[in-house]
Image (cartoon, rainbow, N blue to C red; front, top):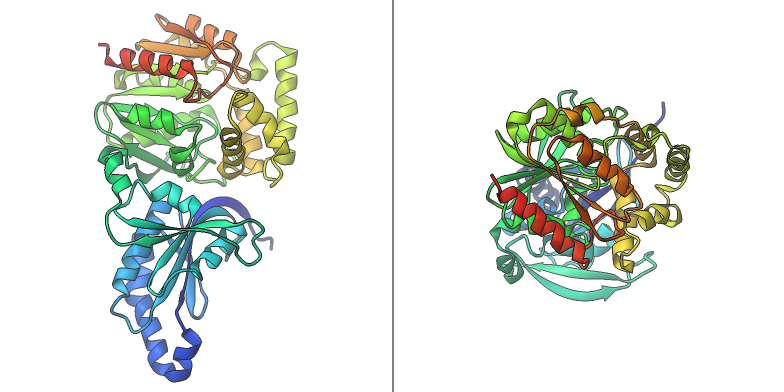
Length: 457
């Protein structure tokens, strides 16, 4: 019987008992009683309460994984507080990284780093990697001590480590309470689990999922963070990871338009939204159009950016169909490799004017968002999109924006979408990037146009 293996991004918590061998030699019975008591009263219920999973107990410790890094740090902090009165102390380490999971265990660099970082923690303390710090330092009422870079055993490059300290984080207070996203889960009509996030306050603005999303990774990404934070400044922003992506269920084979529209419906229902503004970006435009055509009474405003109503295989172009086939081969061959050479082709198309940091983020986003097999299936489904008939039926206020030199979705496809949707307003933006970067003049134009449109009756 074959073992199912999955590669994904996870928050990994590694912990062990301080001086376990010495304690066992001194009083084996008392040590085992303290260890089992800690498990029963604090560790196992604490991990379950924060949505984590104990992967295994290691005799003198345990390994756990969490879907979100914020919950991993919260859980570790609460566990250490609960264990303060115990007869044994624990060290804990948390890392956010790539793991390989089978039916029984998890492996990979993400796990190894968590274990190495854990060894640096004080008795009763917690150490985290810089990847964890980047995600949580503005979101949790905790202090953090920068311990600098460390050379860890069997790790080729130095790793920056932080200690978690009691006390409120001044950075979080400066960020403001509305900039802490809450991640929840719901189920689509066919049983697929979906992760969605809510952040900010004000009128509801729902962003339909596009292909490459990861709720946690995007929140700190130099590709997405300006989009999310600026929109959340005046709205309750709801977004979700599409099926097969990010924190949503990964092992999916059906990516039909009907299923993706049902996913959007499941998210807005779970969020308790009756009427809202809807934002579609890239492939999310087709899903948004289909939803708005079928439930126009729920949509106050429709914003579509960088999208299309017909996929590459329906554009009547031999070149477009050939490009679709060539890029599918690149996805299948190179999506999951550590070497980013294959993914760099996509990055160069999506953000040709990106900095080295932004390109690295996008390269990593592709690898951690979906497996090569799933990415291939999604790519095929996107190239078969055809919502022209639904676009003609729209009866909601619609704003369409598109960059003139977009290399992923041609400018003409954006114009076609605007010409098909009755009464749609079209705004041409100057730029080459499919995803508008913060330093571009087009970003401020985009934001002004969208905010002005959403404020209109």
